[in-house]
Length: 238
Image 1 (cartoon, rainbow, N blue to C red):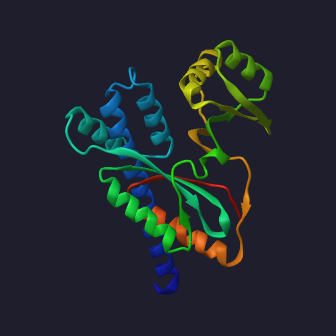
Image 2: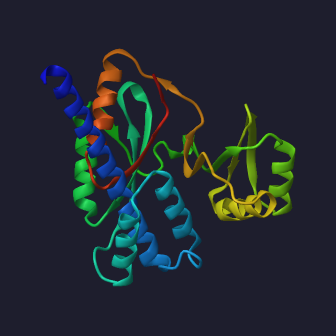
């Protein structure tokens, strides 16, 4: 079978590991969301949105159902949302969101990722003021004005609307995320969103190259290996 087979095996293993990470991430988020806000997606809009995103990312139904069933029991782990900020290789700014049942362990694990790649972890607010926290919806549509009118009529706080090659991208405050989705559904029917998420958007960028880029890739790989890490945001430009 030779080298080609070995390469394919490695590629398959990496894909499998990546899928396992995605499944674990969504399973944990769905469990926490259902436990805190209720297991009925019709009454828990945050859970409904999370399930939609999970399905979009090809998370199997049994993973979603298992997390909800676990939340119904009322027991199990108590996860806390933790956020870490700091400076990565080359001085780029990084925000790391985690869900953990042991904050002390998670802080130690995340700090190790910083120190082993010559980075500096900071305190809350160290870099987040240089990011915008925004909800983003992107979908196929060719009339920017109609979309904007529908959102403004529903009193959605729209930060920006972009139109490019038959696709509309809407940026809004996270508080209006569900209101925006409902307004778009009421105006245009069911929409298959290309992007449907809430994240931190950097206001600028930091160029990372050479040895710093190697360290940055190592830094991201180390964070990706941590089960507690849910999302990593940064302003690095390669």
